Image (cartoon, rainbow, N blue to C red; front, side):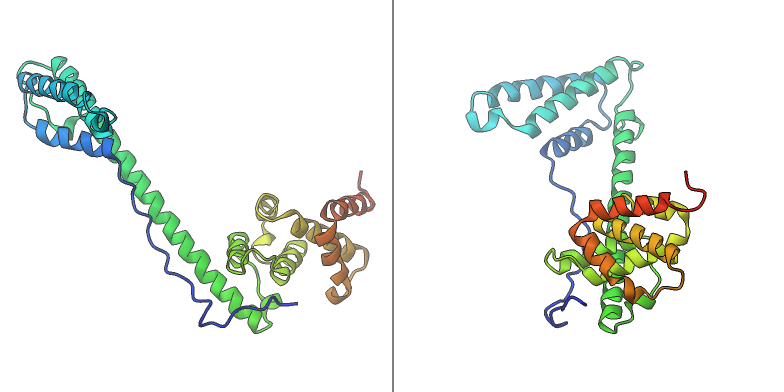
Length: 253
């Protein structure tokens, strides 16, 4: 039975927004130090370090400033730059563009930003596919639709939208497709991956369907509706039954 959905006016999907980078006081402190230190030589950085140490001692006297993450980070960064220029040739001026630590952080930031963008695009893809499957199920055309790569995550999205209720028709659709190797399940790798992406009742349902169809070629799937009910209530037992039937195949060891 198709799970009823609320009217479209109340089932509107929120826009997927890019996650914001959390505020990091220590990171801000390091950036401030680097901007100030740009162009400074070893002596200027050493003097700035002494000033930072003085202010750190002053702040330690006040309870609300003693645990200042930004202040500690600024002091640590001045100390690092002091050591960096002390090991550099005389007269070297600090340049963040040639600082390996800074460049490493920039590369990590770029990679993290790319990951966030990819996550947003994937969330948008899942949401759009969920809208498509929801429309198909309302048209009673879901069973004629072939699953695609990533539809396991779409199943989770549909369940989330329904307030956590199991989407029995979607689960049955995926189980039928997995048993018949339809859609992206034609690829054996996708079938293997499904074991870690789909819940046990769906996997048990698919396994039992595959064995029953083998035993009774040409059987109408409507006659196997009981398999879904069994898999929902006793998934482990159904899995064991499917495994037993598989062992009964001619030539099976």
